[in-house]
Image 1 (tube, rainbow, N blue to C red):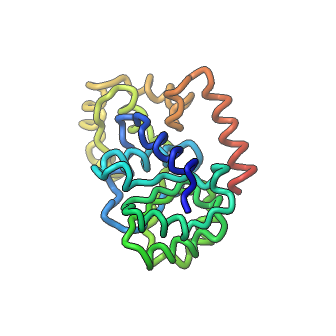
Image 2: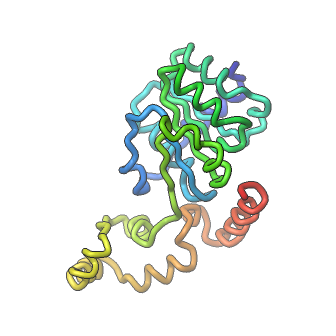
Length: 227
């Protein structure tokens, strides 16, 4: 069964306007895979990535369901039964956030993957739990890691310009031309100083004044819940 609260919560969240900027991982993930996992620190943008994909997938709204396993309405909810109901109703894309909060999630994901023609994309913040519990899914799930913002991504967000990613050999061999190209667009030292102060987590865009307190909250939650 899927409760009315979960359905309404999903509809509300999926209807929200998402940031236009897409993290690098969005371009790397092969969204044709049936079971995709995204792990990373709290606040690094995993939920945003899920919702951006949902809005870009061109599926009808009723064929997408978003659930967060740390939501009160998910207490005692059986993931397999939820997926079964969603599939029987014509569902195509199931997004599961903070999956490590759900008991025996690896067993449920395996059963869902083997039973239904349903795409499942899940995320989790607890690296230890995901690493330990997903060992049996190594042949079924394609796992990705989303780190905090890189300096390049931060500058792209701040300036709304595109900066190429370079390998270390490229930088060593072509550092002068690369530096010249970058300096024609921005003042890199200025951007680097901003990045050191508040640039690692995307939620700095919400409020610079509240960034330190939000960052402290992320640290405390990580220590209390994810380790």
